[in-house]
Image 1 (spheres, one colour):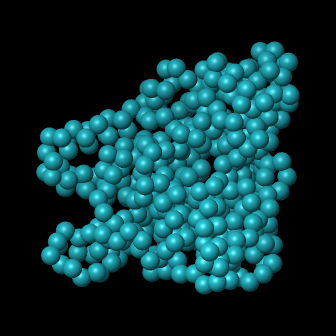
Image 2 (cartoon, helix red, strand yellow):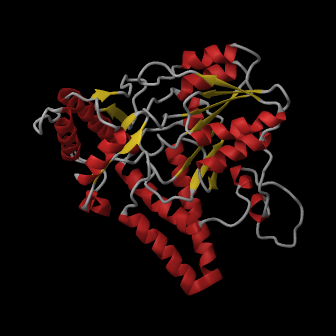
Image 3 (cartoon, one colour):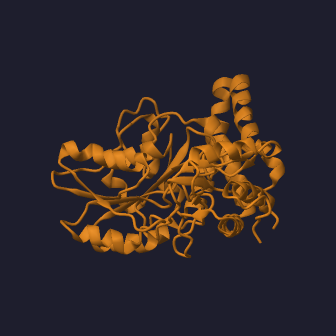
Length: 389
């Protein structure tokens, strides 16, 4: 099973079997060089480098829009997912009694912006996750949505961080719009590994930063605002880059940019954008469809092997809910201790979701999965012979 991404581009492979892309991804060499190149040009040219940096930023915006499945005009650069969520939660107009519906085991950054609105009288209702896989079928959202006034916003992760359940965003968007609600999706745990068509699916807002499946650095990300929703958001950080006549320094008229760029405010993090762009180029050349097929096969291999050696797979791997995240437990062993043992063997995972979370990417190999299974097999008392087939 040949990886679609070139392993030589990932220096991390020289030491580690790195299976933690749902945490923080290791930077590929082209991203490192792009960041350094941006800094070198800034050092050599100062303001003379800005125009070239800005041109590259627009190329990266276009590449990001392709991964999102959305028009480039609807994409803004943000610092991170949290900032994107804040721009939505605090940019909308709220009235006392407005409702927000959010899953009960969300990542904190996908929950806190909505809880923080309670002092404005906003009601936040939680969708209970179901079963050991912590599943969130569309019907679970619909049940909570129907139990009270129509919500203003339904907010969810596309892929849940703990055990990897992937929500059907197209189905959920349909339910939301039928109820008059907006759908806000944190897509950080899917974007870059699972093909996305956010505009076609009807998602209203979505955000992700680069440091997970997009294989980019921390401190830069993207925010998608469907064009029909742009005027619903009050720009929270207005600046020279927010207006249609940017760089006309003596024009003081506040005329918003026609697209999502109005939310960007000031100068870009060019080094971060350039690095993210290099990583997006790698993903684009490989094709996210091919990356997803590879990662899905690695996850299936891991699930089979882990079950054979006596571990318990906690993630739901049904067709509709599977993602690039698999969480498993080793009976009688603390997840933190197992994490440490795996590190000793050169394997990087995360203790998450009540177990151990693995999240391979497009450069990982079946041999790395088998190495993981072998170590877990030793812990389970199955010896080192239990490997996936």
